[in-house]
Amino acid sequence: MTKREIECEQALRQIFEYIDHELDDTERAAMEHHLHTCHSCYSRAQFERRLKAKLGELKSDDADPTVRGRIKGLLDSF
Amino acid sequence: MGISRKAFEEQVLALVGSLNGVARRLTANPADAEDLVAETVARAWRALDSLKSEAAFRAWIFSILHNTFVSELRRAGARPRLVSVECDEAEEEEVQFSIFEQMHQPFLLWFSNPEQAFLDKLLREDLDRALASLPEHHRVVVVLSDLEELSYGEIAEALGIPVGTVRSRLARARGALQKILWRQAREYGLNAAAPASRQGDEGGTDAPREAAAGAIVRKEKGSVR
View 1 (cartoon, rainbow over the protein chains, first blue to last red):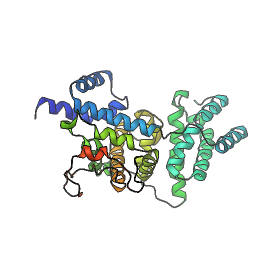
View 2: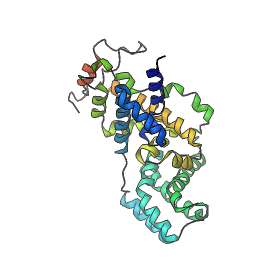
View 3: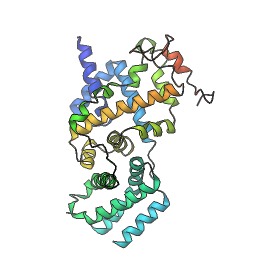
View 4: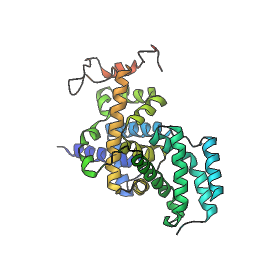
């Protein structure tokens, strides 16, 4: 196994923590250094980040007015 | 500790959209989701003393929402799949699944990015359907992380599991989600891109996958979406 393969293996193992901003500063710096030198891992990170963003677009911030009204009424009753 | 009544109301009203959104993903039914949110808020009010700090409010109320959902299911006689760490280990295969690995071809890097083209063609309903197909223990971590943007620590708090379990469960859930998206894409003819298969059992062709991905169409519509 070459050094590059080990680096890729580590990068892929941490790819979700990277896109979720869960790596500490040292881990993040090592990951970003690797991504600057490895097009395949960089592309993988881009893919996972874009898929995560697309899922994020499913979120709806506005509750149905009926739900909001019911919850307001409930809060008033406490 | 708890917080003031005013602060409680403000926090609840700020989060009611998120609570309802997660409740809908859990129950798959708007009326049940509304009831779940109302019951969650009522329980939260009664349990206010258990809130450690205002900063912990979001994870705390999502924890009540999830616990309420599970207990309501039990009361209804359903058996939610309560997953242990050991059970998770059996799902190792799913964590390995990656659409990127299925489609990415380094030697074609400069000509196309089939995996990016795949994402471009994904519609909201494709993602909605795939997410709804996930088992509850996978769906909830994806929803809390990717839709609600909770940290791993907050998700751990909300679901009552260790952070390490959140990490591994999220990786497996994403693998499972991608596997569903990949299967859906094959069903819709989205990706003849499906490999001439690495397993050799999917009936793919030898045509370059990037060419197939470039022709992403839905068979039933006959048009690019």
